[in-house]
Amino acid sequence: MSGAERIEGHCLCGAVTIALDGPKHEIEICQCDMCRRWGGSFYSAQTGENAEVSGDDAITAYRSSEWAERAFCSKCGSNLWYRFLPTGNRSFSAGLFDAAVKFAVEKEIFVDERADWCRIEGDHPRQAGQEVIAEAEAAGFRFD
Image (cartoon, rainbow, N blue to C red; front, side, top):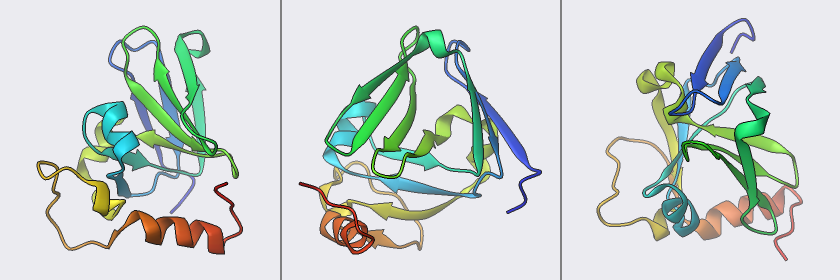
């Protein structure tokens, strides 16, 4: 993906804006219990090469586990990002970006935790939570 491409997004009220360079044209869907509780359904993760975020005074970050932080706009409540703390990698809620409506689903993770009413059509990989955690541990991350 070329770093020259950029997509821009914002929260519901516009207090937080995000410009994402080199966006991936596929969305990862997380079906875990925590993401469902956080957003009311699955989390749709948009990633890219570099992000510029403005509106810091409206951003609240919450450490949701030993390995993750989630952020939201404190003015309108929009979910903004998920950060995997061991790497610092951050994904943004795909719903913030108008351009993301045309992107395909790359894969679903934690499908063993998904709600019956939250099934996504399509021929893409689906991983249970145990598989996701095993991949992360194989890469050297510890979930103690």
